[in-house]
Structure formats: C-alpha cells, structure tokens
Image (tube, rainbow, N blue to C red):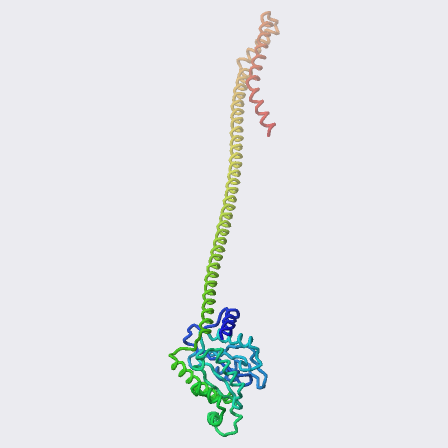
Amino acid sequence: MAGVFTDITGAVKNLFTSTEHCEKLEDEVRIVLIGKTGVGKSETGNTILGKQKFKAAFSGNSVTKKCKLQEAVREKKKIVVVDTPGLFDTTTDQIDTHREVAKCIGITSPGPHCFLLVLSVGRFSPEDNESVETVFKLFGKDVQKYVIIIFTKLDAIPTKGNVKDKLDTYLEDIPDALEALLARCEHRVIAFDNTAPSKKRKEQFKELFRLINEIVAKNGGLYYTSEMFEEAERIIQVEIEEEIQKQKQKAIDEEQKLRKEISTEKENEVKLKLEEERSKLNEDMKEKIRQLELNAKEQEQKIRREMTDAKECEIKQILDEERKKLEIEKEKMKDIFNSQERYDLRKTIRHKIEDEDESWPGKLMQGVTGAVSEVGNFAVKIAPAALEVYNYLTKK
C-alpha cells in the first residue's frame, strides 16, 4: 500500500500543477463515478448533470480512456462529476490505474462528497468483487462510508413496473459477495434509468442528491478525505500559492513596465514639446531679426532720403543765395552801365579820347584793368557753388 501511495502522490505532483475551483468550495458537490467498462458511467454522469456532457457509446468498448471532469449548476449547487475509465477492469495496467486514481484525487481535491459505484444488473462475479476491493484499497479504507451503489440497465429485468420495482426484484436473489458489498455500504442503493424521459431522470437526480446530503451529514458535514487526498490538496495549495505569487510578480512587472513606458512616453513628450518650443523660439528670433533688418534698412533708406533731401535743400539754398548775389551784381552792373550819369560821362570820355586828351590813355588803361579785376573777383565768388551744382547733377 505504501508503494501505491508513493506512486499516486508522485503522479499527482507531476501531472497536476493546478485544479479548477469555484469561488466557494462549500458551493460544490463533488462526485466520482467508478465502475468497470460498459456499465453506463458516462450516461449516469449525464443524467446527474442534466445535460449531455460526457461522450457515451452503447457498446462494449470504453469511450472514457482517462479521467474526465464535467460540471453543471443544479439545486443551487455546482455539481462536479468525474468520470473514470474502467478501474475495475482486470486487463487495465496497474501503472495506468494508479495514474488515473491520482488524477481523480487531484481533480476532486480537497475531496469528493460521494463515490458512485455504478453496477449493471446481472452476474456479479468473484473477479468483479476483487476489482471493487482493489478500488477501495486504492482510495482508502474509509471510502465505503461515502459510497452509493447505482444499478443501471434495469430494462434487462423482465418484471413489469418501474425501475425501483425492478431493482427490488433483482435484489431478492443476489450473490453473497454482492450482498456483503451492499451491507458494507449500508444499503445505499438507487436505480437509474438513463433512457427515461427528462422528468423521470430529474426525479432520479433529486433522490441521489438526497442520499448524498445524508452521507455528508452523517460524516459530520465533511467530504471524504484521506492521507492521499490531503497530500494532493497540499500539493495543489502549494501550486496555487506559487501561481498566486507568479501572478503577483507578473502584475508588479507589468506595473513597472507600464510605469517605465509611461515615463518614457512622458519624457519623449516633454522632449518633443521642448523641441517644438525651441523651434518656435528660433523661428520667432529669425522673424524678429528679419524685421529688425528690414526696419534698419527702411530707416537707412529714410535717412538717406532725408540726407538727400537736406543736401538738395542745402544746394538749392546755396544756388538761391548765389542767384540772389548774381542778381544783385547784375543789378549793380546794370546800375553801372545803365546809369544816365555814367552814360553821359562815357560820352564825355569818348569825346576826350576822340580829342586825344593826353591824360586819358593812362586812365583808360587803369580803368580797363580795374574792370577786368572786378569781373575776375565775381567769377571767383561763384565758382565753388557752380562746381558743387555740377557734381550733384553729374552724380544723379
């Protein structure tokens, strides 16, 4: 038995890293179907669940090769049913049997509320009895306290009446080994017709549910457990805790990653904003410089225009002044040459010259020289202004 236990717990540890639980274990009713191939375990599981969950075949070949779990909500409880392969079959390899028992233990952890031993009416051979004993040994000595025997295929009994009547008829004449098995399980027996209409099958389930509640109540309100189930639960709890820690660490890692991504994104956003501000500032500075250069150029042109206008005014003023001076000189010349007195004097002088007055050749020479000198002085006075006017007009 110790070797079997070692094999089973080892298989549980290796094959199961987690198991599915509902939010509240107390809301579950965990049921294990056991029996040899062909007795109708899968059909019985479907009747219990009220749905066609397990694949069933109406032949001698087993459809269920490995432990399968299905569940449904009935009577405000989550009904969890585990269908096992033919553990009673004498041809089943012992290693495979131990592995599937280990899986069953792991799936139904922390423990099943009942084991449904499915038997079909007919011959109960010594080999069948030996197989039942083997299963009891595998699951533990107290498993019989949680066993309900379900008889199927009662339609093979020719007696008229319902399945319960047919079961009573069948139990009137059974082998001693089967009678001992019933006594061992305190005669918790129920008949199942898996081909009955839905309403009848629902009534069968309610009767089974009542028996399960009686078993649990009789055993202190507890599900079945044993050293192997406790070990399986311990392993599962360790795996659950490890998974929780992994999930926590994953959440922490994801949070840190997200924070880093947000930080990087924020940093990139700030960098982009700074770059945009810097670019905008450069554009603003370039625009201001361009505006300043334009203003400076306009100011320079304005100053040049003002200087040109001022120069023109100055030249005009100089020309006007020189023109006035010229006019004055001209007026003076006119006064000199047009004066009647001078004209008369000229006539007198002419006569004197004509008369060849000895004093006049020298005076005449002196006068001519003086006149030439006056004209030269005037030319010297107006020459600078005339030169400036010439240069300005040439530059234009």
